[in-house]
Length: 355
Image (cartoon, rainbow, N blue to C red):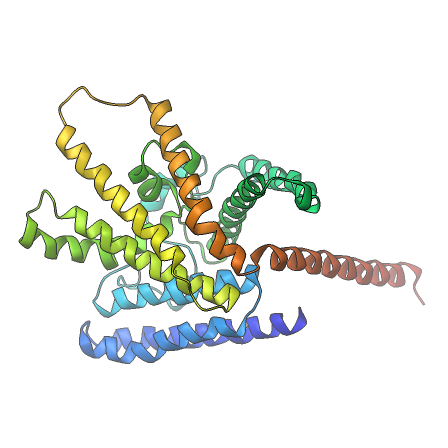
């Protein structure tokens, strides 16, 4: 654990230094191929840095923030677009480039929607979800006696809640330090009434906000000249899901350090085709009375995500030994907390007793 923390400090020190360089380049070099060429060493560095970390909690999140989000934000900045394009102070630039936060008045609406002025949901929402995860721990201890599908459902719930709470905590802490608004992460995805609703408006919204300007919009613009504006979103959706698939394969590699089996890619390609088919059906049926009730749509949507997730998404994650790693990390954190508490008690005792 101590070595992992030392590596974490090295990684994030390198990230901050590299982003300071990128901001300097962006101020001196106009958007275009030359700026992109000067960014390429940093993009490569950001792909290599997560390899120094081996834990899911620290390494997985760092890989997501740096290798995926930061690199895509830098690619957008190379073109003069994205959240880093407006003039930002150095602390804001580094924070926005490396963490799941955004600034500006646009976050106010998200905060109002989620029940808080800072973009987060109420504390009770997160506490309730964490307690729900805690209820699952006895199930893990008896996993040998529990049906495989029940365990996979428990892992899915744990993954969703853990990711939402972790991203919200990181974003909220960073937002408080620099006075930036928090970018919304999730919007109760189990309430989705369509796959388009699930992926576009409820699940990991920060990825959506990065993939839209970096992949979806350019492909849609190019496709419009080939298939027309009405059908241009379909190839754009397929391209977006394909890029997301490749980035998930990369994140899974950082977690497990195992050669990709490309099963996760098939999961996202399947969902890309399904979303495109759903959008096409809506265009054809628009203006007709044929529409499923919201409850039925919600059941079909969540059911499709769960079934395909059990089939194509969870097995590669379990192949990375994610469950065992997560258990070891939780135990390590608990032991670290116990040790820290013992030290603090000893120090307080010495202070009270005096010489």
